[in-house]
Length: 166
Image (cartoon, helix red, strand yellow):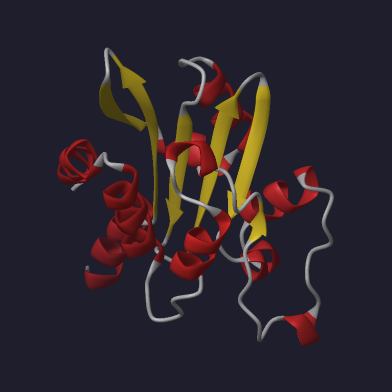
């Protein structure tokens, strides 16, 4: 029975995705269906269907996160840890879309982000600050995303969405 409960918890809480956008000058954070967190093209569609500048944030098992942003007709991608692409399909999809090689065994001891560190530069979060957030090896993916929400000014809406997920 414990194994059954563990499996249910894992499949329910191992991934989540939200879409973030500004509406009437206020940040909105809405939950996306869990299946969207499994497919990069679904994430792109979810952001493309919102206002310009909207973005999706995905947490996979608190191991890594992905940001997909739709800005001025272009898709921007950020993967918090490129080594995740060895074990996780979504991370591999991001690496393929970025036209980057998936790491090999000897590269797995270095945790590095992939993609656009300046994904939120227009919102006041530059590449240096993003790099500092991503370089905290003691932080889980959900903690990094919470830091991003605070830094970008939508932590209240983000926390409400997180409370609804649990």
